[in-house]
Image (spheres, rainbow, N blue to C red):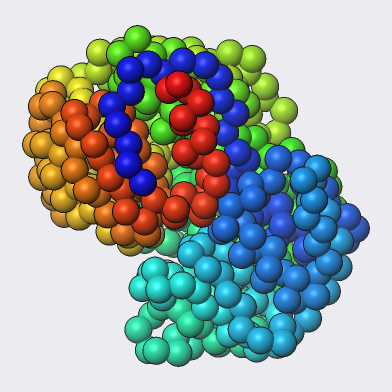
Length: 424
Ligand code: S3P
């Protein structure tokens, strides 16, 4: 797909439902007794993979344009799937389902696409094995396909080396099936959607500092879940609104959970004009975001804020490329093990557009302000890379061609249509 410089960016956009929350609604709804209704569910390929896995384990899930209905069968209601479970491109599906499978009294094989089969699974294999599950990486490379033999599990207090909501959630979900209280301590707090939603479904989950605790064998009850708009999807329009001269865009109903809102803090610290309107604080907090074109300056992004914006770092790189001065990103080595190696891919692709950027062990250094020019960009089949460069193209001279641009169906199927509406 080919993109050109934008002459304007104006109007309103409503981004689709949050990917992390949509996954969890299907999973927890499947483990609850009774029906769970999900509104504003993200119809992206990743979340459809989660639905597919639970249907294969005997859960009836109705997916209509109005809502999703999950007819849960309780904590012990899953059945052994006939074939292999396929998580597609979704790390969240793979890692969280592994935690659930660890507590089932049947054996399952779980795999995914070429990218999933390269992503590290040792981070969940270790704690789930300590709890009593028997997990084999079938190619003996610590990646999927995984054969998971569940059992009755022991509780643990796990100290994770990485701040990862997928790791934390896998352990908490296995903790539902453990013999006592399970605890996870992380180096910094990662997104807490599992804790919030499990509590809402009736589990006893507590958080103190960087430690989350769950009590076993709760009776989960089906609920109505209203999924807020995904701040990770809103991030592309935040950047477009800040970068395109004269732009003004209103992004409606965006989730602003403090474990996810690093993009707002960073954009504002860079000089971005963003106003939060109509804030709601019932359950997952939301706001409408009014974003106006701004002159940005470079900053240092490091430490505890990193997990709160980890998925937004590719688009933050684009903002930094257009900002005056230097942006330094540290403590973000996790970028190397996302859907692509996002340090290498961003450094190569932004350099190709004329940006002064170098990769480091755990991030990048960007000397912003050089004009960008269009070129051919390979998405590396990574949705966040494709969307980041569709935005970079809006401020670059000449044409930018993105190959593999269809990959946005993973998290934002109508992304290009929504972007076009704002620029026309
Ligand atoms: C997610 C957690 C994050 C994030 C991913 C979604 C989740 O991954 O990058 O897109 O839904 O729990 P990690 O847990 O690997 O940091």
